[in-house]
Structures are given as C-alpha cells and as structure tokens.
Image 1 (cartoon, rainbow, N blue to C red):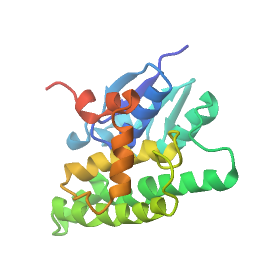
Image 2: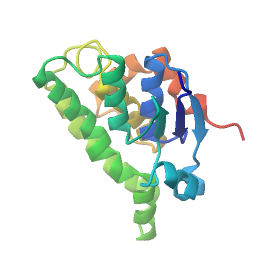
Image 3: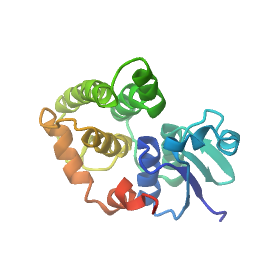
Length: 209
C-alpha cells in the first residue's frame, strides 16, 4: 500500500478531524506540517496540492483529497467505518450535526476570516467569543431534542463526534464558557479519553520547536 500522507497544521480543527478519523481506522500516516501562522498554506507547494490554500490535504489510495468532510465521508465509504447511520433520516441528522460545526461555526472562525475581522477593528478574542458560542448554542439545541446515547447519535462514534471534539478544543482555547452547553460537554467527556481522539489532540502532535 502506498504511504498515506496528511498535510496538517496541529491546531487546525479541520486537520484535527482527519487525524481522529485516521486513528479510528488504525491507518498509519505521515504528517507533513503546513504552518498557517507563517502563511505556508499560500506557498506554491501547498497551492499545488490544495488550490484553496487550506489544510488538510490527504494523499491516500493514489488520490489527493481536500475538504475535511469530504475526506471523512470518503474514508467512511471506502473503509466501512460506520460513521453515518444506515437509515436516511438518521444519516440526515448526523450530517446536520456535523455541518452545524464544520459549515456554520468553524468557517467564520477560520484564521483568515478572523484575521480580516481584526484588520477591520475587531479583536481575535472578541470575534471568537462571539461566534463560537452562537454555533455551540444551536448545536446544543439540536442535541437536546434527542438526548439519548453517550455520543452525538447514540453510542457509536459518528461524523458528528469527529467534528465536535476539535470544535470544543477551539472553544476552550479561546476561553469560551462551556457551562451553558452541558450536553456538548458530556459528549466530549466521553469521547476525549478514547485512544483515537486522545492521540489526535493538538498537544500530542504539536511540532517540537
């Protein structure tokens, strides 16, 4: 099998999702850092891999894949991971939960968006502390409508769980109070000790200075 390569930034929520997924599948990969704080994502080498100038990019199965949700669904389909339930209604719910994080909450807090907001007079902390809780409040509401199970959708890890843990890491990093989101906090407390999640944590993969 050809080597699996993940072009990664240790604090990127999107890359964090893919690390969790690869770990859950027991897939060994080589991580190649792309330092977002040094603008390496806009360097010619990264643009050749990912014309959007983003991370992650995953090289697997002689393919070069971008966009974390697309990568997760590819891995789910090709490795039979079971991250999406069997029934269409349940699949729609799990996708809605994942999208609430990865499409509605995360992009507005992306580094390039937040930097632009700062250039217009916002503070990084103020921006994050405004938009992250808005996203989490909506997600908490979605989850409390069906509170059964240890995780976002029952007792098996799904696409939504893989998205949730990185978002809560980001929330804590920016000093967001999680007390108003007890369901999210309970799910994270059940997920974070799992070996695949723990091994993907930014503190475990941070490059040595």
